[in-house]
Image 1 (tube, rainbow, N blue to C red):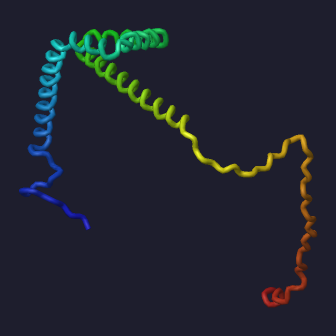
Image 2 (image 1 turned 90 degrees about the vertical axis):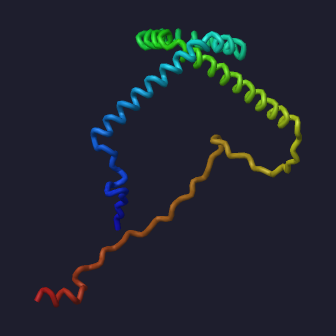
Image 3 (image 1 turned 180 degrees about the vertical axis):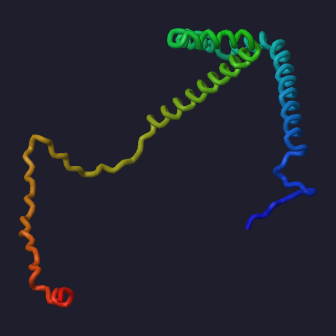
Length: 172
């Protein structure tokens, strides 16, 4: 059984105003997104120098790694590398935020690597009680292995067709 829910005479999956209401909502959403991104751009434009300095303080290796990655892309796909360079220059505040977040990520990875290394060192120092089990060595390919022979099956005999007593019932 299918239930159709409605609110005020109109089903819930319909947008108010129909196609025109959907178009107006889409335009308002795009305009709002534009102003939101514009405000974030101006905010990051003022914060970009501080973000670059903080990225340099947190982990300076972010800058050489980014340049090496860009040079490698330039060797393999020059058009894409030039396009990414142009985008990085045009949206410089967002690129500085990217470098800052990348530096934070590098720092977190180093902390996890140190923590994992310390746990591994602790594991190596601890002795674990164990029990030695007897084992038999595997046979090498040099040794001759006897292959068991399969028993020979007798040939199957076909039944004689003449001995069927029901043939006379259907033929006659």
